[in-house]
Figure (cartoon, protein in one colour):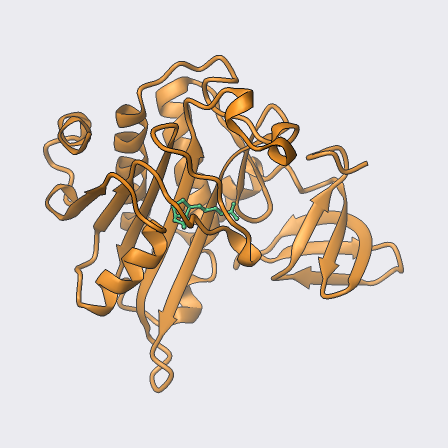
Length: 265
Ligand code: BTN
C-alpha cells in the first residue's frame, strides 16, 4: 500500500521521504508522539491499515478496522508559540474537506470542532495533540491525526455507530483508499504552507464548512448540559454560543450536540 500511496502523491510532495506505513498499530497518534520525542522531522506521516487502539477526542475510541479507512497522523514542527496554533484542528478540518471534495466532488461538512460529516452522519474525525515547552511557550511539535471511513458498509460498524456513522462507499462515492490517502497528505501540505500566514482565510472557510453554526445545540461539560444556539466560530476556533439562559459565551472544550444530528432530538 505504501508504494501505491507514493505513486499517487505528486513527485514534488515534500513529505514523501518521511512516510511510515504500518499494517497494524495501536494508534498512529500515539506512535507519532513516540517518533516526535525521538526527533522525527516536520512532515513525518504515519499511515496504518488498522488501529487496535484508535483514539478520538474526549478520550473516546475511534473504530479503525483493517483496510476500510485511512488512519493517518502527521508530525508538524511549526516553530512558533503554541498560542498561534489554536486554529490547527479547524485548519486540518478544512484541509480534509478540500481533500474529499477534490477526490469525490462532494464537500463534507464539519460538526464543531473536529467531526467530518456527510449526509448527516460521521465520516471521520480529527484528533490534534500539541506538545508545548513550558518554559518558552513554544510548540515543540503538533500531531494531527485523522481517520476517514472509506470502504465501510453499514454492518462494518459496531451496532451503536450504525445509525450515526457513514463512509465514502455508503454515500455512493467509490474511491481507492490510496488515492484518498494521497489527497489527504497533499491537502495537509497545502494547509501547512499557509497555516500561520492565512488564519483569517482558513477560518472563513471553516465557518462556511461548519454545520453547527446557526443550529440549536447542547454543550455537555462535566455533569452539566447547557442548551443554546451556535452563533459563530471565532478566529481561534472557539464556538460562540447564545445560551438559553440569556448569556453568550465562547466554548473551547467539551462535547457539543447538534439538534437533528447523530440521533440528537
Ligand atoms: C474523533 O472522532 O474524535 C477523532 C478521531 C481521530 C482518529 C484518528 S485515526 C488516526 C489517528 N490515530 C488515532 O488514534 N486517532 C487519529
